[in-house]
Image (cartoon, rainbow, N blue to C red; front, top):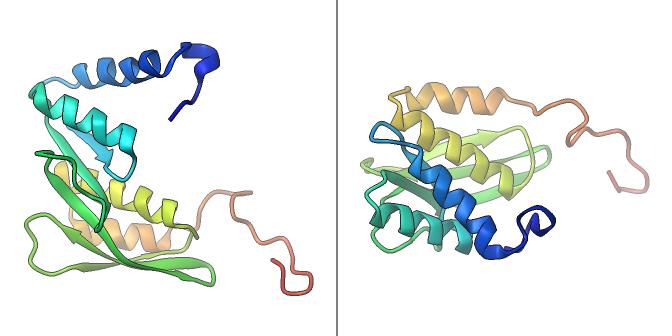
Length: 153
């Protein structure tokens, strides 16, 4: 989307910065991209076509970007009072896993899925990552409940 145009001048120049970053990853690097965003999905396709290792993630109904490998899908996301629960499907696994978060918002669930995909790529134990995410309560002053007035929190 058209963002930071005050600095980059055009959507094309803004996109070029991401392409340049992807080129710096080298043979050991991996580009983890949310395929739900059309611009990011286009970046993933371009990088993949240039031989850059790319791992995509996103919603189960949107996580497709041509030949880009889909490493994780967010399924059955459900908002809870102070967080969320989702089923995630990781590439190469036959059954989905449950991901619990203490922070609200579908965007936070997608961010958490990005962390899971990235951690799995570097060999971390996915169960440990999911445990850590479940215990993460966010940073101070973000999503902090400061009061309730007439059912508005």
